[in-house]
Each structure stands twice: as structure tokens, then as C-alpha cells.
Image (cartoon, rainbow, N blue to C red):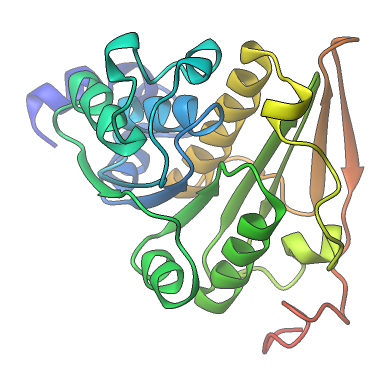
Length: 251
């Protein structure tokens, strides 16, 4: 680390849990963010600011006027642009030392697996069940930790699935093969600060995992009821019969 980096990251380096070694691990890390919308916006901003060395952004969509109420990484002038291109401008403006890669496409199959294989950690900031299931399968296959968040209406949730740990469930252990039954934000609505809160917590969990401190939300589901201002935590056991992670060598 040079003097400019020491100054830039000084406030988190001061934390005994991070220190120089933890900051260096962040600088050496590469993450994949799937979705650069309401959740992906704070995730990308905070990880770039924290000094995660490489960030790959994957999103096939373009910025729309209705996005600006909650997707704070995009500006009015970005309407019509690819979301990943808009996000690059913000991230490089915050921290030009971060390398940002873009995938302006929906990731499936071999392309998704290759993207997951290339990184140290994945953050699922998508908005549909099929993508979440596909990202989960790719992370289990690649043995890469997954930080998963979701928010709708006035409710949010967060968990960490880490196939490096024998006791960790995966996303499918929690939700099974059931089809998507919840409405999208465009159909049901959502408040901007709610997705901002869940996305910020996703970034926090990612930093803990990458820098190697604290207790991640593995085997736990954190639920936020924004209407009542309450957090609740549920235990999530691993399903030994899970068709996704149940056949892992350590199962």
C-alpha cells in the first residue's frame, strides 16, 4: 500500500479487526455484483469506497426514470444508458484505484459459471427467483461465498451462503425449488431507503468475509420489517437432501 492508499482507507485501517492486513486483503479481492439496481447501487458504492480491488458488474438493463427513486448510483443524465456503464462512472469517481469490469448482459449457464469462477465472492442483488437460483448453483459449484439480499414493499432480507463451510446451507436449502410467487418492485412497490439498508448490509457482510473478521450471516436469515422498524433473525439449517448442495464432498 502506498501513502495515498493509507490515507484513503485510514478510518477502516484504524479498526483492529481490519488493520493493514485486512485492507490488503480487500485490495487483493475481486467480487461479482449481479444486478446494479436498488440493492446493487449501495453494494457497489460501498465496496468501491472500501477499496475492493476489482469489481465486476453484471446487469442487462438500461437506466429508466422510475429507477432513480431508489437506484442511487444512477443520475438523471444516465437515462437510457446501460446500468453497468452508468455505475462505472460513479465508482471510478469515488475511487479511481478500483478496477471495474462490466457485463451488460443477463448471465446464464457457462457465462454465469465463468463469471463466478473468476471472483472471490458474489453478491446477488437481482430481483427474480430464477436468477437467484442460478447464481446459487454457480456459487456452490465454484465453492464461492454468496451474499444474498432481497427487498420488496416494506420488507427486506439478507443471508450469507458459504459452501466453503460444511455447516452452511445454500439458497435452495432455504427456498427449495418453488416458483417465484412474490411480485416485482414494479408491481408491488418498494421504498428507496429499504433497499439502501439491505444493500448496505450486503456490503458489510462482503467486507467481513473478504477481510476476514467478524461473524458472517451463515446459517442465519436476517429479516427487516421497515414498517415497524424491527429486525428479526431466523436460523437456516443445511438440508442434507438439497439437490444443489447436498452432494458436496463435505455433505
